[in-house]
Length: 287
Image 1 (cartoon, one colour):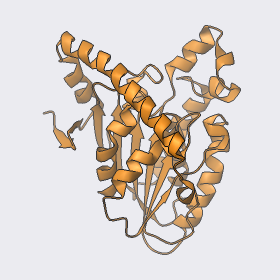
Image 2: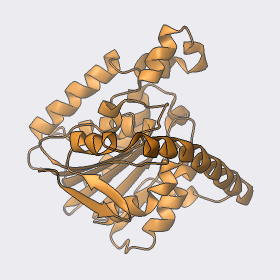
Image 3: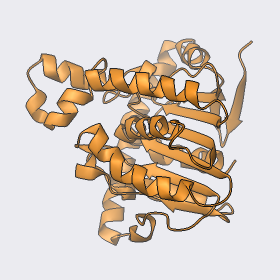
């Protein structure tokens, strides 16, 4: 039986297959309308992005590494060539909830996400590990957008190692159009001799089936086997009109052994979906 729940108007399913099946059942005309709408929402997203830049919104206070023993740490990981500003709308929604005992950390990712995966996660890992060693049971929330989803998954794999999870008792993973298993667009670009359009590290590591992504799969699976005591919760938010990460096995990654929720947001593409899902993301983080 297919089970679903609605959070702020967004319908989530308990498996990737049921989520995809629900979209496939839509009449073709509704799919066309959704596709057309995705261009309109992209335009609105672009205007909002320009507005934020003109207003010079400050995010510096959130980019500071955790230096307290608060029980809950929310680590937000921005997408490729983006910045912490990508989380502004989500932060606005999170502030409507009680943040007592919670620290929000939005690091500037090394080379704006163009570094090697190991290089990008290392400084973040070291900062979070210090927090994980402080007193009391800890909850780690990893929120990754696009390339940030891949980075979040690598961090989860590291903290699943027995020598690293310290006092972490719960991990909540939220992927928003996350390239959790890479992107076939990067793979296609390599085949078409267009790798010059990407950084060398992205062209080598981002493609689905790359050596680094295969290693990440192994590390992640081993981590889950070695840390059965950690409670886990997963959320995957994807778009049916995503040309940057068009792979559902990446954006809607199956997690059969743990609680997970999946949604395909109609009328949105890779970029506009972040702000559109902000209310639901904030509520999921606050659960």
